[in-house]
Figure 1 (cartoon, rainbow, N blue to C red):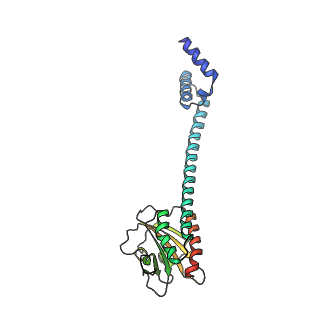
Figure 2 (figure 1 turned 180 degrees about the vertical axis):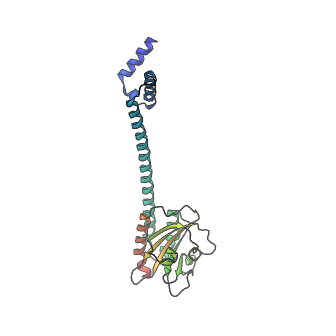
Length: 234
């Protein structure tokens, strides 16, 4: 027993960090030390070490949360950049709509995208896109329909980006047969000579878009789309 103790002592003295860096061993030593003192002795050092250990654990949890959030933000930024690049390749309005309907929808993982433009020449909800498979991609809204759809007709300012559960008016945007459960609404300013507009992302996932999610990247996407669309609809 003495030989084993001397051997263990020698190993510890050669590299004390083996003990100090092992939380389980250190905890066992502190518990053993407490038991040796009896119940009438208060070990303030042990309480201090326990509190430091608790704070360290909280700090590590916060660190992991911050890193996870940073990775999520980086992934979201990459998605938005890829979606914008797919639209920038468009040379015509039809190319733009096709890229938005297919590439952008796939990159951003949404089920449907609509471009909505205010018009006094078509009824609200009417498909006014180019004839063919892109027709329903562009939807007419009545004058002042952009603000009304975002605010639900309430007298308040319409933000540039709105994330929410799909509204009761969604059929005017996505069609009566839609199964959209949540939506991201991007308000577009197409200049003084252009109509007011929206880009609306629809998802069948009710949790895909919610009011507590960040909107900065989608605001950047909306501002980029505004500048592209002014070539064709302003």
